Length: 443
Ligand code: AMP
Image 1 (cartoon, rainbow, N blue to C red):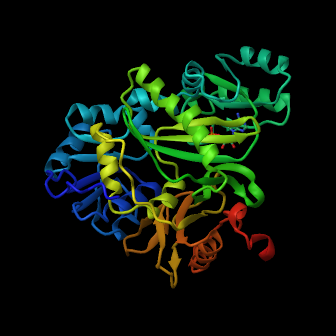
Image 2 (tube, rainbow, N blue to C red):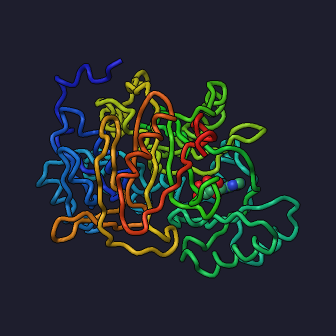
Image 3 (cartoon, rainbow, N blue to C red):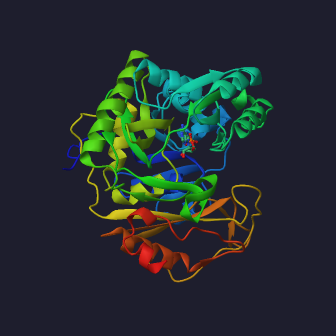
């Protein structure tokens, strides 16, 4: 069903759109929304070298913390609608500031972003709403942590309360490791993000990501996804921002998804309402499917990366209307996004050394790419003065494909990857192993 039947009669507020952020996520959002004919120009602050390869896209080089300059630019470029990609500007209240100035913003205010920027607050939120999650203890000092760790008969996970670029979670194997993790957080490893520590029961099961586009009261679900957080094959090694993903996640049966809606998503929206939080943006539910049912591992207040790059190619040109409707608080409840019947997969190419120390500035060579239902979204790239594409981050490129099944998707994604080279390029060969039928045969 189309959701833009009245679009020709409406005032076009989508002519010029701004996306804030600089990763693969923001490039994939820009790529998805520019498909709509009402969209004339998509600006990215700051974007990256890949942004300008996307039709209708242009980068703006200003600092979003300079609010006067930002508003001047919005006025000058006649931008009415803004999508905020990353969590930090959301946690800093950028959406609130822009809404007060009458812009339409996709992204929650500071109150809603707290679901992500304070893990202790989010745990209490879930407790208040009776939402299934791991048991937890919030501690304010190493002494308090020590007491809980010593007296605990279950294995614990240690988390810094605040934002830590995905690095604030420790999964220790012993009480000693647990104590050392808590100590490193309290000693300032993550600055003030570690003033509070959350100790959590370690739970087990496959992880899935569910995304709800929310207008404050109602929501629309996007296709589900599973990502691979660990650096190395067989899901081993340190946690990263994400090494690849696939969508939809077949592990989520209809029954399981119904349970997630009833036990987790609906109660989350109700609790936000109860707390007078007018949440207009995406809620990312990081879930673990345990033996006793789905449980929330974490909430994020933005799209996941690389899940976003994986899901966006499944959306039709009407997707942008959903984002705008969320920003206006007027989802009707009967919208349907036309979602492709294909499945999608993404593999991330990283710099050698990521997620620890790595060097950047290496030229990227891209050979003959199959671009039929395949995309390359730049995650961390820049151009030098000669216009050469260079590496500029830990995660460098997102290689994405869609096809009838996951074997075809990943065959093609890896074929494209083999056409790409830069000094120290690293990627996992087993992304989507759970859903690739030919994977065990080949490997
Ligand atoms: P987060 O940054 O909160 O997504 O956590 C990073 C990863 O740590 C998750 O994707 C899980 O694999 C793992 N994790 C977080 N919390 C728990 C928990 N309570 N039990 C087991 N694993 C966890």
